Image 1: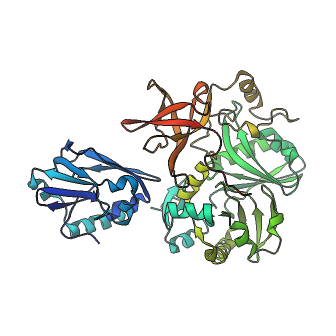
Image 2: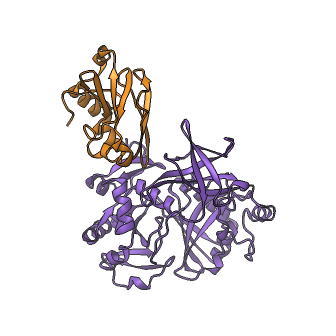
Image 3: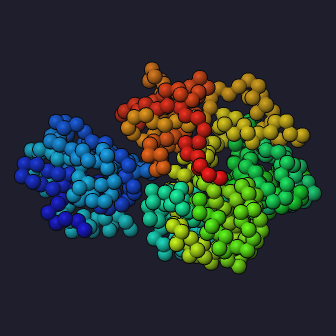
Length: 128
Length: 369
């Protein structure tokens, strides 16, 4: 379910490192908790954020969730497909439903994140 | 999670159907099964099945039943005939709202009141206390009664397979006593979705068998079990007020646009009449409006409403993405000068101000009757 090469945050974002870039989205668990997603608000390319900053929001019919930066960096690009098709986040949260591509600076920030096994255990614990 | 929460007689059914259970007004209720949007569209296009057993039912009997109800509610009870239902309000002396409810007339000395789940205890105290001055007996049947709502354009077709009487003869806001799947039931042509449909009242012990029979009969027609999430978006599209959001003990019937159920000239005095007559004479200072967002964003309960100058003028009482209209809609109170349809406002959506426009009437209205 959760790709083994990704890292995960306690706020239910995933991050996938591709060279100097990091792709970020929300996890399957997060999209499932939110329900039908109808609106994703993302920052402009070029904006910079520090790890832990809120950088966007995801809205389902019933709920709003903030999304937080899992790593410090500059927004290289955003998933523009989500403007027309926010349901991609529900349908394919770990790939086509990605949110932002970040040019990051400090790979050591990744050390505090969970791997897929730790995240699965975390989700299970949270659902109890 | 279900600790201390009341469960309906259908709780097991919801869990078997994969319903996501949440606390609501002290009850453990399904918020969704297959998904809010899917359930919402099922109700608009085919049919949906809701457990609304959390609603309260009070029975009023006695020679002064009509006079009693006239004295505590705003609508004109005497105009009801046997088998008819009306929407009405219980009001405080200030003209503000204790609850909104339906009254069913069985006979001139026999009525049923259907009240909101979250208000059962408050309403019961109110009704029981006011009843002391009249020759009536009141009983709270909420704990024995289950209510199942079958809503959608195919509701009649589905229910007809399970009842003997001809449902096409049962018109809107009328009810009949009969059998659904061989079980004694009160069948009411009412609902809270803006679609045609029925509300079916049965004894708790029969609820599961009726629920299952309806699902079996309806599934081939596209019927889906639907949760509180879809119930809320459906009622909002139909611009039906939700007690606790759009109306409450601080809002008057007239401010809420419910003047059509306030019969100030009926030949009975009622609690709140003077205050409401006074407010009608002087005019309301604020009104509950419906609005649509004209820019991207979703307005939600509690978000500030601002005018063109950015001044706070009100608050969103209900707001959501509308699955049918595919835009953001909502309601809220604003000063009367901002309440005309066409008025441009803005909703403060977190850090951003999103443009909105006041609109008239229901956001969604079904085309056929």
